[in-house]
Figure 1: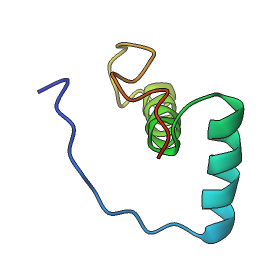
Figure 2: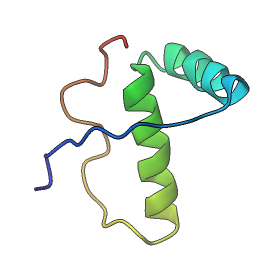
Figure 3: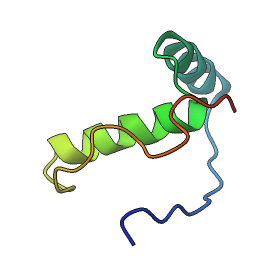
Length: 64
């Protein structure tokens, strides 16, 4: 189950989405991979996610 990906519709403000897109471009990640990375880091820092792989699986450098 660790590598399983699930689709989830996300409602997000245009300003936040644009900022995430710029950040993902700077980091050479897809927008999806960047959102997942930010969420994973926040969960890890809050102690709600066990330490695991630092990078998302296969789609880290694919454009959305």
